[in-house]
Amino acid sequence: MKLPEHFREPVELVLVLGIATALAFAPDAYLPMLARAFLVQWAAFLIGVAIIMGWRRHWWTATGSILGALLLILQLPASGELTAFDANKSGIRVMHMNVLQPNIRFEQVIGQALQGDADIVSVQEVSPEWAFQLGAGLRSAYPYMHVEPRTNCYGIALFSKRPFKQVGTVTVMGAPFIEAIFEEDGTPFRVLVVHTTSPISYAHFQRRNAQFEHLAEYLSRSDTATVLIGDLNTVPWDHAFQRFCASTELRPISKRIQLTWPSLGPFSLIQLDHLLVSAGLVSTSVETFPIAGSDHRGLMAEIRLGHAR
Image 1: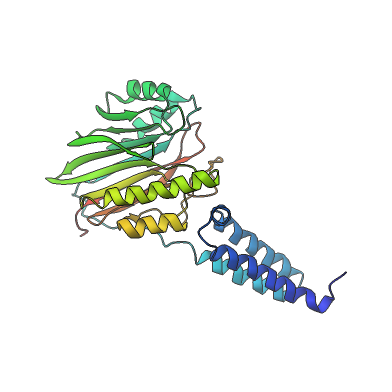
Image 2: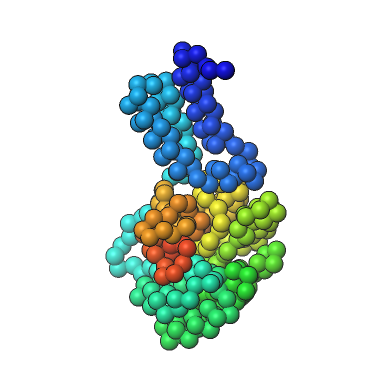
């Protein structure tokens, strides 16, 4: 049965707004989480629909599409706060790379790490082979290291030019996370390198969320200034991520849309890699960069302890 012409546009309007509303206010469940991960792309799609419908003079549908796109854009978090500092004050340069375990471009990745000249380098998906190559290639520039290789894509490593005051592995539901304590001007701060479970199934989704909950409880035991960096396998507007930030009071410092996965040349679709800081730490810059042979873009940031000028 064909819909009468005068009903078509109101029905299209309701359909478009219904889809946008469902995406914006979907419950914290597995399938909605997957759909909401692509809010940026959904918003771009609705803007495209608005342009096409406007050109065809379907004003109701065009208006509904614009409103739907705005509703989705409003779900995106604000950019992290970048702060100006006294140029004479030292900072901590942090680099993060998910190298992709099957990747064999060892020399290029090591070269990128050395060229980045960061104080601290976080590496994820570290297999035994990656552990050997990274150790051999970075040892002279980064004499302090803690490596937890795995064959299941959840191996992890931390390389540092600064000596550790303390370093160890925090195991959260079977996943190794690295916690390192450093000191800056006599003040301790910690770096946590985290790679949560990829939510490729409902069971993995539950496991990832449980890891956030356990990690939040662990962080609550100490008020040491904290930098948390890693592939968190979530987007900034995901309910689990927002609950984690609220309970730990960690602040994301990435830009409003700083996409890192999958890396397709200069482009990516969603943000899975994050850098968060606690009170007492702020960032002056954060950028992404391509990683040779990897499906992730890396993060490079400068963190400073204390107060801005």
